[in-house]
Image (tube, rainbow, N blue to C red; front, side, top):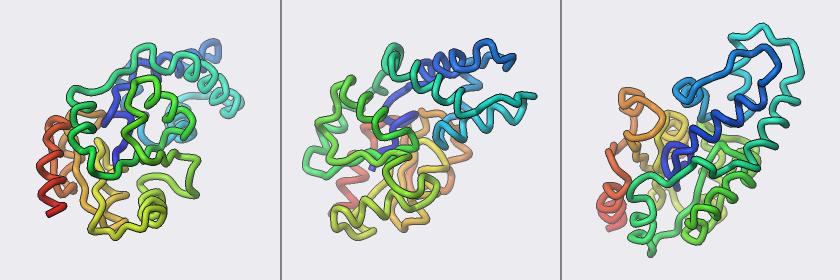
Length: 210
């Protein structure tokens, strides 16, 4: 099970651009990529909640989200790219069932995976709107386990944030944190394993499968 943003792809610039488009003309201060990265991870509604916590904005949050989604959908991979080694890793793990579990909406996630040429490697996508809960809830993981008839000992989640790790731990599966994503290393200490580059997950997964 792979997280998407900050794990498979770096989408921070496109998210930042869509965010600034959404808030243009509202009086809300524009955000940079570094600030945007701190907001990513809990889904689009929570992203705007965190942004607006620091702003005296009394307008319609849903209207901002709609503007964001319109722009993001039209520019979803203008600056988004795979992290190094991702495609090779997916190729190397060809014998394993693979899914994406993300707090990004399912439609947007599928569009990114398709546009970047890696959709074919995945058996399923669980987005923020696929199940009743989203990470750090274990619900998306439990949904995937049930869907494919898997036991907890047969699954691994790979992600860059506490949301991924906490969801995995709550679901009782093995967790692997990537250190190159959107979160500082010290936040990833609870993971069973930590890797500095995506291909490093290959020997871990093969060992766990023995």
